[in-house]
Length: 240
Image 1: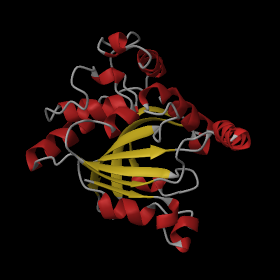
Image 2: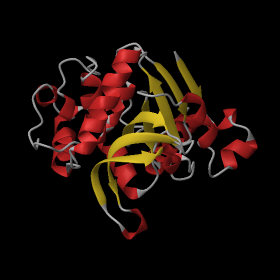
Image 3: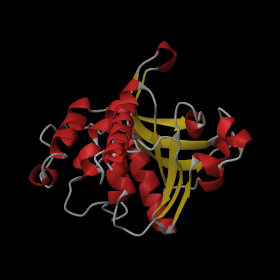
């Protein structure tokens, strides 16, 4: 099952609201579910572009980051477990961390947002949560080298099925963390592909049955490519 909302499907007040992702995330969040987002800043666009070998049309991926919903706390907020490079507020946090999902409310910064439901049983949900908390307690770091290794493997089916060439002990990037947590519940998003070669795009495209809820505001077609398509269409019309 897939629910996809494009900009034209959103009410004007929702599409213009800088916190336009809030109602969507509040509606679909649940313990153990997966969140995906696609950001607009330079680093997020770079990660999205790096996944273009995985997309059907060669455009950049819709997604740049993945996280796991933990639970709603006594503060009334949904909290997520994620591995991230957090450079905000003049502080640097690298690695596994727990944050309020409110950091993804800004629709301008995160135009694409999704919640994936793999139909976990109550026991599987607990296994995913425990695995995430174990990583959090162990202070696992964010691995840029592993991320680079994953990007290298995207260009080769052979490398995709091997262990990450730049893997490091005690380190995980975002989608590798999500796969690690789900592996504790017996779930592999792409059987045969090691967890440290799993990208956010892979989770979204997993062949395993799951429900997907999305808001898509940035479809990943670069302005240069849009101009190229437009020119080809005009030239084709002229010669016709």
